[in-house]
Length: 53
Image 1 (cartoon, rainbow, N blue to C red):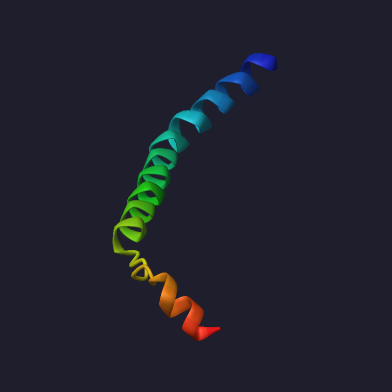
Image 2 (tube, rainbow, N blue to C red):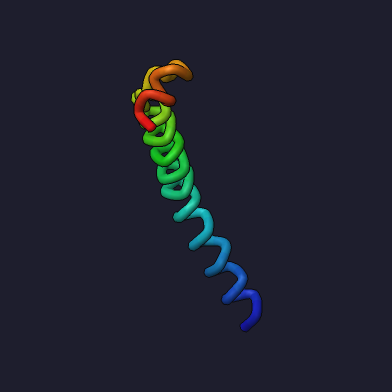
């Protein structure tokens, strides 16, 4: 009985492995895309900061 459960577990793991790779690759691609499209604000000079206060 234990062998049947073990075989079923291995079969399930083999079936899900490609899906896991696809999900991880998609997450990395989205993260890379978001990181490359982030626009940081231009640095503000110190006198301008004092003038705003």
